[in-house]
Image (tube, rainbow, N blue to C red; front, side):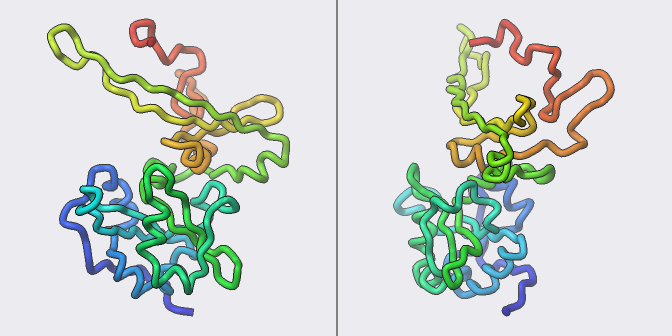
Length: 238
């Protein structure tokens, strides 16, 4: 097997879009499609060991901005059984097509890579990794449901924002989102995830890490909320 040491990128975009800065800080600068193709075996092996590699494809002529994808372990995909599949040997020469299929808006989907028909890693839109919790325990959906747990999905329409009569910002815009909540058979909520789509919300379904709980006043649940207070004051309701 090829070595799996960290791959140092040789092609880095001149500027990092703000939405990707968190990923670059965590996983390093992205590499280009050609470099990813040349190092395909090493990058796949690294992903199997838990590493994530960011890959950027220049689409500025057609879309006006670069498209970012990521080669990731399978546990970063919410429902790999429903995703398109590529044999590793077929994906390498068509990597640009694989990335396009993973990132195409609004119909992009994770692309599963297989070796001898066995899923090994995935190529996903890099944005699906933004805001993934760095610690805590990811809830394995299939196992959780088989044990009697339930997962509910909600859609929050957000808020368009508002201004005062003088034109000053009065309410920050709140983007719409999907929320997944995991509850034990007794109804106790033990995890939640949010995202721009149902798949992203499920992908981000985590139990909060232990350090997020408070056992001393003021008490907080695992998500930083006080159960005895209303998080939406009357003047912010809509």
